[in-house]
Every structure is written in C-alpha cells, then in structure tokens.
Image (tube, rainbow, N blue to C red):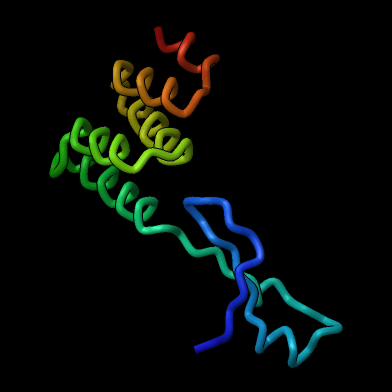
Length: 108
C-alpha cells in the first residue's frame, strides 16, 4: 500500500506518484514512483477486443460498448483492431468517431 497523488488525469488513464517513496528520497526520484492506471472502460475494451479476436465476442458488441462509454482513445483501439482484421466498415466508423478524418478517407 502506498500513498498516491494524481499528477495527470487524462481519461481513460490516470498517472499518479508514490508520495511515500518520493519523500524518502526527494533529491533522486525514479521512474518507479510513477504509475499509470487504466480506467475500467479501457480495461474492459481491451478484454472485449481480445475476446473478439477469438470470436467469443462480436465486434459489433464491442462497438456498442464503446458507444455507451465514448472516448477517442477507445474508438481508436477499436479502429486499429478492426483495421488489422480488415473489417473496413467498422474501422471507418470508429476512425470517424475518434475524429481521425484522414484515416476515414483512406478506408472509404
């Protein structure tokens, strides 16, 4: 257990610093004092995308989940995953939703 203080919040992730460790050696902080914590929606999206690769979950279900929990980073994960599977229809829709217009034009 450690005392963490958020230093950067950019949903769907939070970056925090271990204040106990920092106070023990404030002159020489290390990178181990910083932690990046994924939000639940980011973790769930990654699980759904992994499951869709094994055909346990349909990509449309993942699309619906992200539509209920929208964030550009989640849309980008879906777009890249769909593009890798050559599902250009879903990739196009997801790139548009994450506002990457140049990729959407390529996919059309």
